Length: 282
Image 1 (cartoon, rainbow, N blue to C red):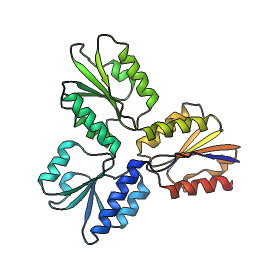
Image 2 (image 1 turned 90 degrees about the horizontal axis):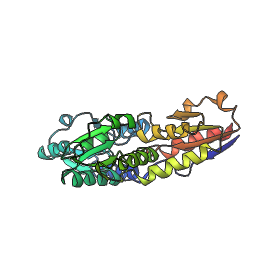
Image 3 (image 1 turned 60 degrees about the horizontal axis):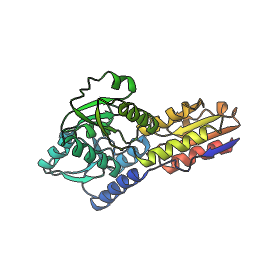
Image 4 (image 1 turned 180 degrees about the vertical axis):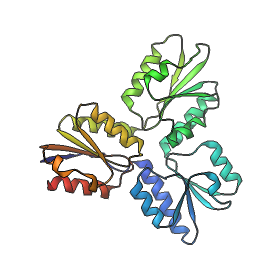
């Protein structure tokens, strides 16, 4: 069996920065409880490791005591949530991915000029909730072209188009081109999709075209990992999404002479290595 492993598989810059900030805070605050509002990244195995170190994942801001230390997750949080925490004296370490922070500020700048946000993203994703909070002139959220077509866009109002940083770039560009063809609309396009996401998706496509089967490793709640599965399946290549090596169906995989391997941006290298070793051993 030939195994082709993606060079881009594994932690992106934003995830590395977020975990480094959390590690630094843990080292400085050995005797103090540290809180995170929601998972710092979307990987259950990483979260279990931090829970074992005493890091507490709060589901709501009210669960974080006044004066406590809290880390803002890599996906960011809604602006009003951060303001609420600061008012209560919570000591905040901002681990928001720089790419997400840039998207937040671009949206804020454009909507303060009176543009309504058109956001291409998943409504239940924490990053999207944060991005929407920076839209001072209102927003429309959609996750497919059909939803955009049904929006009551007013030619008299200016708009700005942005995307969740881990969205499919080809899909976003198609949407941007479609809006540009509508001469009656004034739409400023904000390029908010992360380059690491684009490079990861492009490499996944290249590998998918060369192999008979693909394995994508990463958390099931990870948006960018699910997107990798989607772009691979769009190449008509069978694809399996797993979180750990224990989920691999070895008898089925033995049937394929070549297998591609990639992973989401929040997947630790050691988990990818375990899956890679298991595939090579076949």
